[in-house]
Every structure is written in structure tokens, then in C-alpha cells.
Image (cartoon, rainbow, N blue to C red; front, side, top):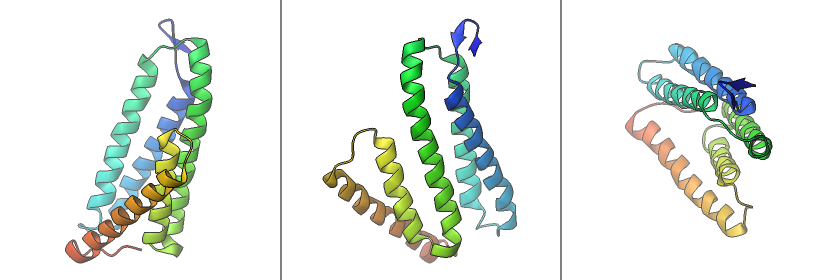
Length: 151
């Protein structure tokens, strides 16, 4: 597909649209929460919505050669679909597994997928330790400081 003679990265645009739809759903569902409990999902959903719309616009404006696009599309599509799968698995598992375990696994998975390099043991352990500190820190922040009950 092309606009003004430039090829559009359709697969990335589709993933951006899907993520924007998920973000809009998160903002919509946040209405069911308390006033303070809805702050985080609304803020996160709006940031995700704006970022995915930015990626969508960038896809419409950027032109690439056929060879460059075919290489990038395959890797980009696989990475994007893997990231979407991790986020969906994280959201679904929150209800039955609580916050810490799914969030930690999701953090490590997203870090390894987004890195773009082959994972090494050292890098995986580093992501695991950093992820544990971030997730436990967020749980403490929400439960102790903000008095927001997490699953």
C-alpha cells in the first residue's frame, strides 16, 4: 500500500491500531474503578493510546524500500505480536495469579523481546533482578502509599 508514492508499513500500522484499541478499552473499563483506583489505568491507557497513534502516523509518513521493508516487517511483526501476546497474557493472569508474579514475568519477557539481541544468561538475570525490584516497588507504592488494592 502506498501514499504519495511511498510505501506504508502496514503490519506495524495494524499492530499500532490493535494496541490503540486495547488502550481505549482500558480507559473505558477504568470507569468501573474508584476515583483513585482509576488514575493509573487511565494515565497508562492514554499514554499507550497516544504512543500507538504516533506509531500509526509515523507508519503513514515514512517511506522505505521494498527490501528494507520486507526485512523489517517480518522481524517487526514477530516482535510486535510477541509483545502484544505478553501484554494479553499479563492482563489475563492478573486475576488468578495476583500482581507480582505475572508482572515480573511480563517485565522480563518484554525486556528480552524488546532488546533485539539474543538473550544471554547475564542479561536475563539482570532483567530478572531489575524487574523484581521494579514490580515489588510498584506493589509497595500502590498498597502502602496510595492505598490501592492490587490483584
